[in-house]
Image: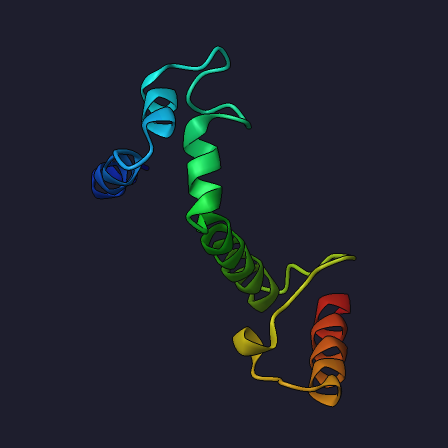
Length: 103
């Protein structure tokens, strides 16, 4: 599965035009490649806030697992995904989910 990021790449390069050093860095391939942890692309993505999107996608993936009953020690769930917004609601949710997982 692939994602078309051409519009985002154009936006990034337009932004980089304001900063010649950044543009030069973006246009120069790194030794560890474009997908390395410290690559220019990954750093730019972090600066643009793409990490929040990734965390939200991971939270949704975790929510789907919980709904299927795939609960393991250390799971996390957001109240927005399961309809609770306080400690009592969270406790009821945890009780319900862990009881269902034990069955």
